[in-house]
Length: 432
Image 1 (cartoon, helix red, strand yellow):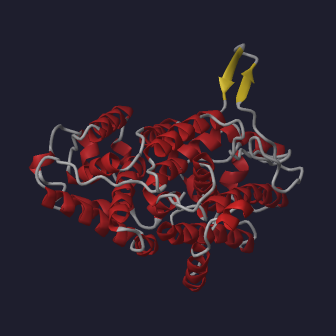
Image 2 (cartoon, rainbow, N blue to C red; image 1 turned 45 degrees about the vertical axis):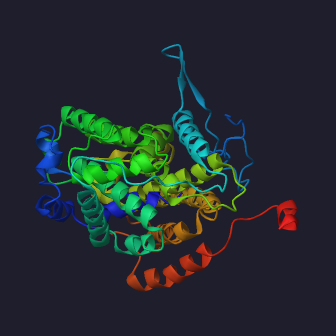
């Protein structure tokens, strides 16, 4: 569940600095791994009925699919897993169901590969073009990028086993490079065709045919760990969405976007972070909690960056909920904090916090060595919501951030929570 942290740290620093660093690295220049011309991309870097998904929208009761509501308040509804489109006369699968199907597939893959000790058996390094020293160098470079652009998270990864640590570094770099395609210095030159080429490159990567040495580290990682290709493809779909879509008519649409750009990282990383051998939770529930953290972090990003996105002509807020609050895009572009805006923001922040609450249930189920960075991500990002409230909901001209002092205070708290073992049933405790 660890993973959304990977996604959230993508915004820690400027995109130009990262890719200057990557372009200057001799890893990218290795001719041994060049197999095609990537154009502009080359410049970047058993199905259970009791579902645990949280889909939240305003004005009815909050609940997780198949579970009772967490708060019993009458503000958030449960989204159906099918949506009826009367105009077209057809039934459309909801975003919730689409994402749930991916989670089931990934969870099933992990369960099939779990050993008798409930720990993943890491395979030895695979043979790739070049030699193992180059592969080791590739992993080291991924670690350097992570250390430079995600300092707090990098420190957390040092608590992991060497194999898991290197794999997380590789996943982080792939996600960052993918994100840079639409948010980096060359974003204006990126086309749908370029993203198609990036996806083709991903297919090769999963087939053991990496394009460059950073890809080689990812290729080795997905061979060792039970990571499915679908979340990677879905993240690329999120980049496609950003190229053509700047409005979201309802939360179902926004939920899918949040999954594409943040929840996907959770699905990529859970098998690497590992589930505690003492966990009695289902694999699906751990993945759902991870997904909840990804959604929570991305919703927090969206609320924090309303003003910045408006300057780019983008509004990542449910249009129907804005209308219900008596607001429109014009109000956002005007950038004035009114009572209507405050009330709207209160409901949006409440939703994000509910996802954070759901996420907490899964962190404790992770492998002990992986919990600290995840708890740190959760606690620090949730505090951004507090800062927005302290700014009187002015996310037009004030950027909510957590100061260094609060960050430092949060880290030992996160560490203490990471030491708490998974809850055990009475019968299990008696056996022990």
